[in-house]
Amino acid sequence: MFFLRLTCSPDRAEWLSAELWDAGTAGIQEIDQGGEITLLSGFETNGSRESLLQRFARYRPEWEHDDATDWIAHTKDAWPPRRVGNRLFLTPPWHDGETPPGCIRIVHNPGLACGTGEHPCTQLALEALEKYMLAGRTVADIGTGSGILAIAALRLGATTSVGLDTDEAALAAARENFALNGLPALLAAGSAEAVRAKTADVTVANISGTVLLAIAEDLLRITKPKGTLILTGFPEWELSALQGIFCSSSVSAMNEWRCIVANL
Image (cartoon, rainbow, N blue to C red):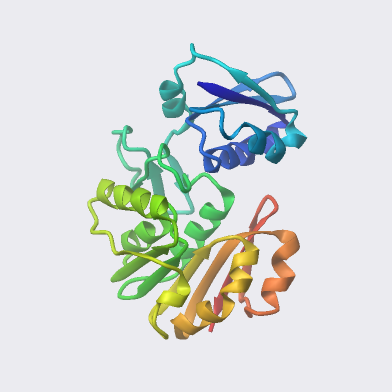
């Protein structure tokens, strides 16, 4: 096992952990150094060394080899259940505790690729979905990744929730997460261009700002008149470009990340 050692301030630890999960870490150990936080994240191969060192260059990265650490145990310790928004309760499959009263349980395997639910943008999208009455509505999740947003939409009352992704690994991860929740997986290979016009009451996309701009016409095309767009995956400095295309009714924020909700 190889591991990446990063150092950050306490207020950046949660965000940085989310970035490491999205980068494919097998587990994270957090060490409080008294004023600074050290994050040790394990990786199964040496192949991602250069890209990770470059991606996290500002956090004094060190790359080491370690055969002694039990990264499976660290993964479980680093992924406790968490509440998102007012009603959503995200939990790993190994947690068998009770769901808090009034909450909706969503089981999600953080060991899978394509997103873990930790990233601020995922949480912003989940909170936005929770705010809208989804009962009887059709939801399209573009760039579904691990499928967590499509699953949450069904748990929140959507009649139909379809997830689309161009990555086969993402679709495999989404299928497993749907199975963990006892839900049939309605998934398709492709992006918004594969969806017929005026299909979705709610379209959600947690993708980079560059991709959102590239598929903007399709996102608008597939969303029904008087429908809702929930768009995230981009930092504050890309917000104005997206607002120039999507007339947002609200913008939410977590750290530097933003989420647009646009009512058509």
